Every structure is written in structure tokens, then in C-alpha cells.
Length: 114
Length: 113
Image (cartoon, each protein chain N blue to C red):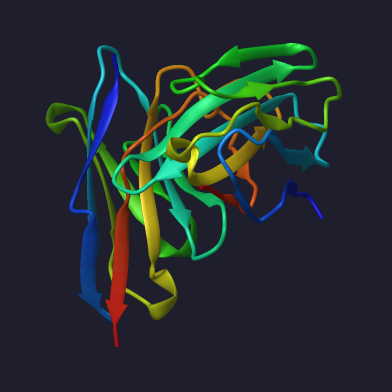
């Protein structure tokens, strides 16, 4: 089954404790992206990747890192989480860069930073 | 610069009634427009998209949207609401394609039995 898998689904942590949210897709997609969803703000893009070893900042990259060492994986790293990073995070992927492709989303990771 | 405004963060309709979710965009060039739906505890799914050609776009689950350039709108409609339509709906705009989206703040649709 074609899917984007995020782990964990729920995560509670404390300020300053490094964490990684994993994202994996089994569709051989070139493009992958991370969004955060906050009430009243919709979805905002954090980082995206056009292909292996090619990443770029989205609209709200501060406090986040990503890597794309393999095509299928695109982990989101919070080196020193802060309470304002409490949010619902979504990973997404698509086959090609272009207007005729659609994004496939993961089920989300609810992060709480205390 | 591009932006999306969704009027009404919450919309309630009775089962069987017309669904109308509003979306207006701002863009310096003709954009590509999308509607995504998010069911509880799930990621977003594409409902429909407008790229070029016919301005009335039909999507999944009986939804459709019409691109009106003169009104800079892309409202989502469905003639008869079903309980299963209860979800959050996001309008999105892009200048380059489906993977460079700018999302609206979302509209939560409640369907009343």
C-alpha cells in the first residue's frame, strides 16, 4: 500500500531535549516536505526536499533541521525544542515537482514541548 | 506574493443541505488552486485542483469548485451534505505546482443530522 509513514504519532518532551520525527515513503517520490499545523494558522511549510541531498527552507524553518540521505526518508530534527514548537506536524511527498502531481500526507505527529 | 483567505473557520450545515466553503486568493499571476480535506486524526487528502482549462472542477465525494478570476475566488460546493463530509477543509494556492503550496487557515465543516 502506497503511504507516507510518520513516527511517532504522539510525543511529549521537555525544553532542550533533542528529538527526531521520522518520515518514510514507499512510493519512490522525489519530493518530500514537512509542515506544521497550528489552530488559526493552517499549515505552514518548514522544509522541503527536491531529491536526495537537496533540501531547502520553507516558510518557518527556524529551530528545525532536516536531512535527505536516502530517497525514502526525510527526518525532522529539533536540536533544542522549545514550547513554541508544540504543534501537529505533517510529512508529505509527491512524485515529481510540478502542478500535475498531488501531495500524499502522513497521519501526523502531535508534539508537545513542556 | 500569494495568499489564501478562507471565510469562516467553522461552518455547520444540515444533512442534505448545500455545502459552500469560501476561498479567496491573492496572487500576482494566475495561480494553481487546490482543496484538501482532513478527516479526524488523519493527514490531508486532495479533493480537487484547478491548474488550467475548464474553470469548474469536479473532485472526489461529489465536491466541486469553480475558479472565478474576476472574483479571485475558488469556492468549494457540494449539493447535498452527508454526515461523512464532516472534516476540516483547506484551500491552497501555488504558483509553481502541487508541492509548493500556501495553505489557508482551514474551515471545519460540521454536518447536523
